[in-house]
Length: 160
Image: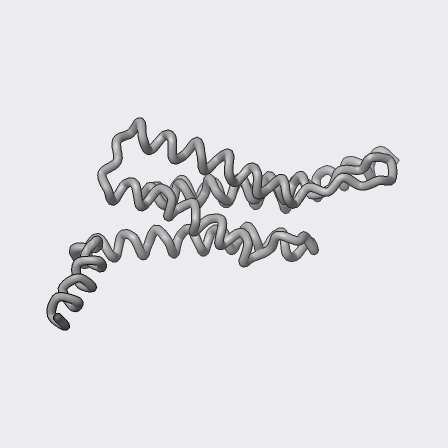
């Protein structure tokens, strides 16, 4: 009986067959986590509700949602359906960060929601083994979040 239980446990954990595969999976998840963390750190520094942990989890989850079908040898058509569902689902998560204020119908949280959406895409890229694309996308996103507001403020100050 104990041998049968042990064999079942081993069979359940046999989805990673070799060192190459475990290294690849670990690398992809760590890249997703690190890049998501960078995105979240920027948001946290600006006092936004979705910070480091939220962005890291979104990136890791997105990477997992593409890693698992890729490990199973899912067809391209099925993988595109996974990606479509992921994009829509993360959009719903991002919608939770948007607040509609009662004074002058002010909307807040759109940038954070967009950041969560981009973080999911970065996680997808990392999960699919497109680490360079994920890194480049993160750098461009951080430029938009950090440098563009500075340029906008400088332009407004010059007009005044």
